[in-house]
Length: 121
Length: 107
Figure 1 (cartoon, rainbow over the protein chains, first blue to last red):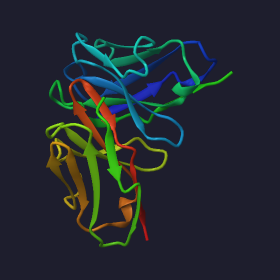
Figure 2: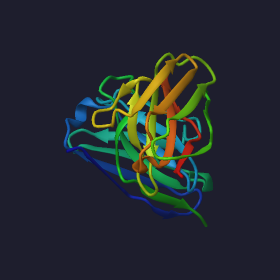
Figure 3: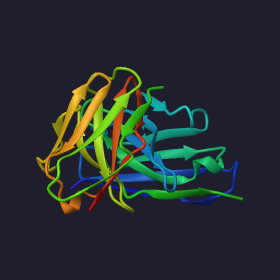
Figure 4: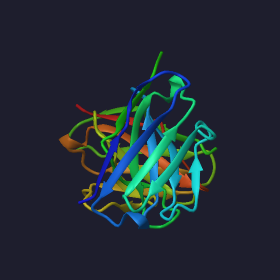
């Protein structure tokens, strides 16, 4: 069965960095685009970033462009989110999610349990 | 950026009722729309993609319709397990945005 397990969340001061990881299993990882989606406490969902199955393309939400970097290691079935220059408004549960079967199918058919990032001094 | 507007923001209905949730896009997104259900403390669950395709394992009482800028999620006969927050999401032109959600309560 498909499993996505996030890790790396925690409390961090504004301006600092954090790297999230998402370990995938139960499917052929190198054939799916992988996304990060976040949800601020008590708020709705916000798409953050995507990396294509082969690592050739990545896209970001305007709110994180230039500060966050998505990457993946297909040999480890893992996708990462490097978050730099963190702000209070980045406080959220961060979900790793699998994209649909086709390259432009940016709906999310499997989600992890989420990892909480809290940016506070 | 494409904005997604959902209505209503909250609805309360009885078991067996037919329920509809509307989602409007600020510009045409063809059929690139998905619907999710989220329960407290959990990640969202995919219900519908490409506006009207039912995800495997999702009960047939859920259906989606629409194209262009207006979309509807219908629950034909509301069940006790259908409580939660429902989100629409567009995925067009290398971006993705969600609606603000519709909270469904069981009377």
